[in-house]
Length: 358
Ligand code: NAD
Image 1 (cartoon, protein in one colour):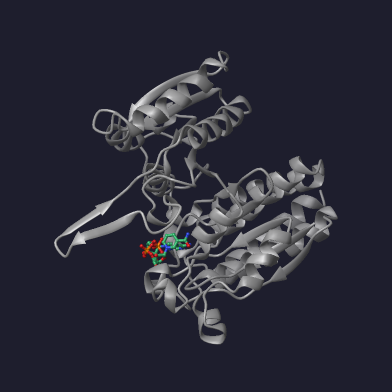
Image 2 (cartoon, rainbow, N blue to C red; image 1 turned 90 degrees about the vertical axis):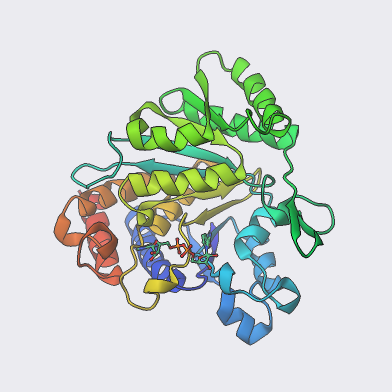
């Protein structure tokens, strides 16, 4: 299996190095058939090639079995005409990665901000919604008829709503069998109404799975108050993006927030957080998010290609992360610890090796 790895900007290269070290140890410990190619993107690629996402890298991602994408400093990119291409958006669109799966759970011994322990997954639609670059055949979903008037257009389609709902119910079937659709139908009755119509149709086809609905604003409060009541949350693009950062922070830190984006043929691991320019180059970023995301990618590949050792790799990483984070002396700064990015990654690899040899 071949992975294309794109380190990205800011803390991207630091946390990607940590994820690659973990992959190296997993490959040895579990005899994974895995080869890795690292490709330059982002501000470094812009300087060298004139674009943050060279066409050759996009092609390499299309050919690869899976992609690992580090965070990208999109807020610092020049306009698209000057080479600033958001790799995260471009890959989601080009590879049709419609489902963004974002789990958040509390861990034994690790402080969390949610009032209850939690173990939930946000299933976020990735290809439309309030994202200006995803909505139009031609042109942008944002426009400015006059200098003092700006509009944005949000697309919601039956097809995209159905396929994200199916992904959520399939996932819930392997978990606690509960799906909550998050929406804002009280003020966006047409678009949110269409989204709910499709999710309800999928819910009717899964009578064995409990289904309920929640308005997005009260959902933000309920996550703080009683996150334990949720299992799988399915929602549109922007709501999913915002709620998943909230859920991750409630579970302990944004630095723990793993995610994959998948479609019919491709899967991309990606940290939920951004490129954290405020701590870039200081060797203090928490690499857990990208490491857990990479482990989710291995599991996706394992299920797709029926290679059990790839799924075993995810379980091993989850157990090793739990064990290392359980010790306050081994945590990174975002979790109140003193460990550097590299020291944390080495500790995790030691734990993986020890567990694999038992
Ligand atoms: P951010 O997620 O980068 O940072 C928010 C806060 O969380 C910062 O204080 C940061 O130091 C901290 N943080 C984030 N990840 C961390 C980690 N792994 N370990 C420790 N602390 C961590 O959000 P932002 O500051 O709003 O955005 C910075 C840049 O990232 C912008 O250019 C933005 O466009 C981009 N961004 C990219 C992605 C992506 O690549 N998918 C997602 C969100 C934001």
